[in-house]
Length: 361
Image 1 (cartoon, helix red, strand yellow):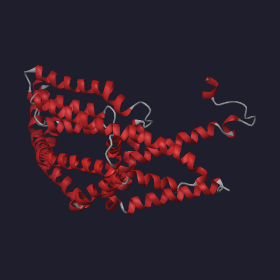
Image 2 (tube, rainbow, N blue to C red):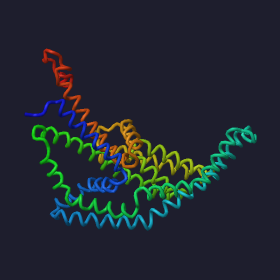
Image 3 (cartoon, helix red, strand yellow):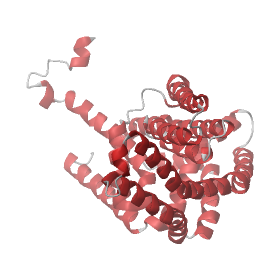
Image 4 (cartoon, one colour):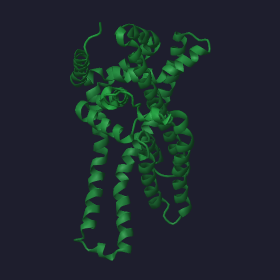
């Protein structure tokens, strides 16, 4: 006989509280394992595809590991140092850009030449603050991250965890399936399949979109000669994870830089704008429908709230688990709504009136 509903709710609530408590207490400790698990989940379809081609799971995992090592070496030698240099250089160049902006505004609005002008003082203060703290900010970000994570352990543990999880992924899923409560196994499997569908559609798909667009923006902006094009492209690609934010922020930043760099040559400014227009068209008409799909069910507002809430409560680890937890909550909420609409409370005492979706049929 199944447990009463009240006891089931209590049991699952305790399990959720234990999970949140462990996340809060062991956040920094479990970070390499969370990242390793995310990498294994992301690469599992690749391993499955290689297995379908006739390779064993071990060989498939080894091939993926070798490719990952190669990509990491290339990034460490070529991309990451350039990205850091351009980020620091951009911080140093912002005061000059603000000075040019101030000169431009002064020509159009002579009142700004007044030494006591509020806008003039604000621009000068902002420029000095950014110049003095840009390098310090970058150094602090990297230093704090390395101090919290313990870089050596992270660099070693994370790939090892990802490798072994990827190698044994199917077996772990089978073991977890064997531990499911027998009375609810079919329902849990259905919900887990929906969660996996959301995760596969959003996380895997959106990360792929971010990588493609970030690469496209960076290469295209550097080809037209925009200074700091690599940084702007990387920022735009990273923020693409949030719909429309990446193209909006990246486009505004790149066009602003292009105006000051190519002032007097509007053709290049138009070229920079066309890059983001083209990127948005590719994302909206091909990448997102093909890789993410329309049935993900993660609203941008809900995603922003989940990232903010979990990031504030649990730090960087919380931000990593925010998407899967929010996907799981979304699936459970939809399941609860379905149960409610099929229940007596919604349909009334007669129980003869079908839900609106069934009436439409």
